[in-house]
Length: 215
View 1 (cartoon, helix red, strand yellow):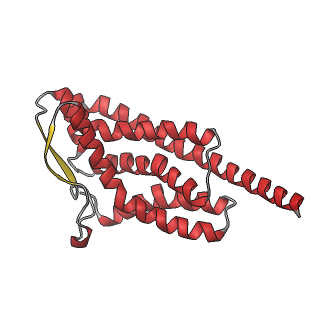
View 2: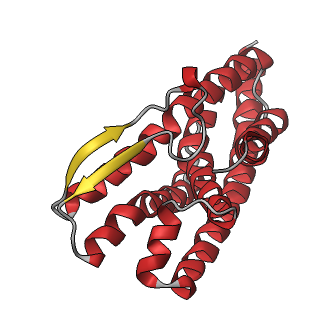
View 3: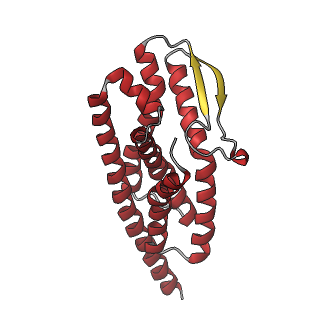
């Protein structure tokens, strides 16, 4: 299990800093930025484990397994924050391919989200500050944190999903997948940040031009 300090650093680098860059470089008014940052941070904190475990449950369902025990929300009030604070206990998946699907499904969902985000933001999808940041968090930052956090957990001795995947497919296949997933996460965050910041400035200039023409 990772230390609280290490997890805090991961959160700052993967979640907080990209959001700050988005809002500080974007052209949204501060009256939208400040509450958006607070709400999105709270939403991410209380949802990322739920989404992770529900992805496990979806993978388990797809391969014909059953859930015999689960906890979707860590008991934060008891100091449970790290790996193992939420879980899905499967049954009825004796085959290796079933176990692989169960353990790997959240990361497949993450990759789909990262790829989908590239199309969404390229098409110019942008609402106000809150919806732009929330979508960026859900499609980019949450998957990136999920992937990188599990990789660091594996490197620090945590016997979680990636460890179990490695037991099935071997280290070479696992690390090839990790390199692709981490590379995609970095690429997606970088490209989408540029797209969102550029789009926010374009929308703001268009709004100012319209306001000027009306006045």
